[in-house]
Amino acid sequence: MKKEKKLIRTVVDERNLARLGVVSIQTRVPSSADRWGHAFTIGDRHVRIEGNAPEGRPRGIDTNVLLGIETLFAAAGCPEHNWLHTNGYELREASFLPDNGNNYRRLRESINRLYAVYFTVASGLSGSNLRHNESMRILDRMQYWDVGETDAIRELVPEANLGLKLADQFAESIRSGFTQALDGRILLGIEQPPARALYRLLEAYRYTDDGRQLGELTVELEDWRLACGISPGYPNKLLRALGEAHDELVEQRYLRDVRVTGTRSEPLLTYVFAGKDDPDPALVRLLRARGVSSQMANKLARETPDRVEEAIKFVEYQKRQPSGVKREAAVIVDYLTHPGKYLWEQPEVIKPADDDIRVERSRQRVLAEEDAAAREAERAAEELLAAPPEVQWRSVQASLKVMLKMPGHLTTREWERLEQLCLRGERSAVRLRRELAAASASMSLQSYIEELRSDLR
Image (cartoon, rainbow, N blue to C red; front, side):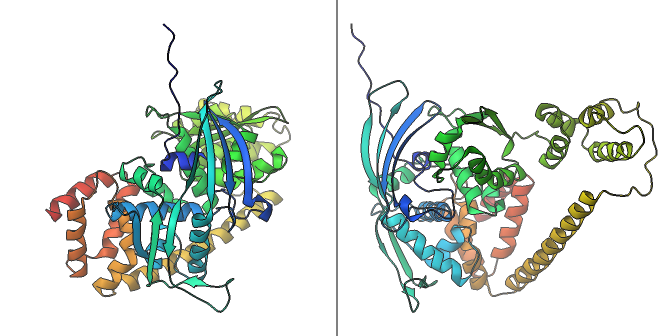
């Protein structure tokens, strides 16, 4: 009996929307990219997409805004009419954007791009000539108030009503739970939109359709460029365009490593995802910069984290001796794997090389800027902590929704109870957000939320 072919189609959920690369991870795209059509293969998925974006291709912070829309729509209970009724202030908060007029202008531009873009997708499995074609949008309608003398500078009115009607398929996917469970700690820790967009894209491809989580993902650079929505360029230029986002995701301990293999003309990228017991990425990078292999650098950073900097100092000291150092990486590995072999007293002062002086000055400047920013943030936080309860609640409501309205966290009734307590001043909304952030950083968020739920019953 002839085996019946099973039709393959793409479920238009938020994860597949991320896989399609409709939103470019670049912050700027040329006007020539307003219409595009390309095909790419990632893993066993072959996709062909044709897009038209009269207001410009979605890009940069549009990833933030998409996440904000999804979060607020889910927090509102996924209404059947598919309308999200909010305001610019709440959407900005849920989109991880600072509170300033420039970002209300960027929000206006972003929702216009997301509303205007439409695209047709043909999808199937590699090796098959069977494809499913579907045209779709992200938003069907929108209503908002803006202000400004010219179109170029008009911005959303923060407290005015903002209405966004999600396209049927997109709304239904959120309602059915077909969304990405993105880590709020990572989202809050990432500073630049391209890194947040790359994180969303990687999470979309990290999971198979049967729910398995991949430890590694290998992609051809050209296919990955198309999935990321990056403008054409030579391989080295493309790798540089991805470099800063890679660094941020390693800093956030989402990625352990990014390996480049293949040929010069057809490079391969392998993303190695981090695990709970992974070593400090800063120590790994320090060892890799000295020529230690990736596998050995991870092993040594995990097993001897307190001696890595000591080994680097030893090599620097030896390099200034008459005998010098022929194989720097080999000496570092030997030093760390045979702790009793090298007996030396660290000189009180080792004259740094010119490069070291420049690096140290740069590091001190960065630390000074970070300290100043931290003091300013602390001052603003203290002022907000002393503000009336309704001001506190309005300021942190959206970010609390991000952390508390995920599946398995607070129910709608518990959320309403929490809102009442905060507005009456029986709980401090600002202090609650601090405690949630601290619990997330210490990997105890779930237990904290369970205690909070007990208090709200």
